[in-house]
Image 1 (tube, rainbow, N blue to C red):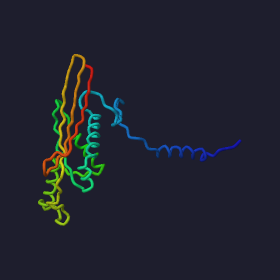
Image 2: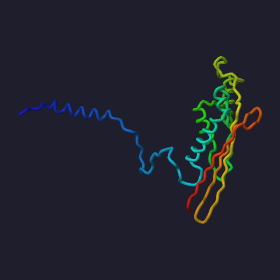
Image 3: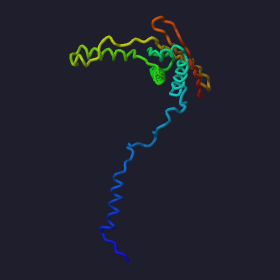
Image 4: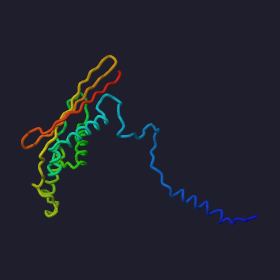
Length: 203
């Protein structure tokens, strides 16, 4: 019969305990388990309202169409700049149209298009320039200089509208998104396109 020393039996147990203490687990929060992550690209058809899938389809359509225009291809080569005005919401529902604009601009930038900020972002830019140049808090040699911002050659603007029809058993919603590329100096519309979406639901 082989006799084991107490130290021999204790070593594997301590090793197992040490390894289990080193393991990391994903953080969890208390809850009833009714919330879970989903695919952000999955088709969303919860309601007839404009949803994430609609925004993705609109952005993809407009981006692909824009990138095929000679003006945008020239802008990429010559580093001409683009800006976007807020998309007008002419529908009967509320949603943030900036979601559409930001998605389109992000996709354009990934394909080499440079754009400048506008609207509320421009005011933030102006405020920061004033702070660096007029507050006395920054070294003159290290502060951003006034008068060096670059103007855009083209401006994107557009609108989204809807027609809602309701019957006794069905609700039908038709959306149309229009987008235009305008040369700022001349006001000429160099490109325009539209995307149509129809959604229906039983009542």
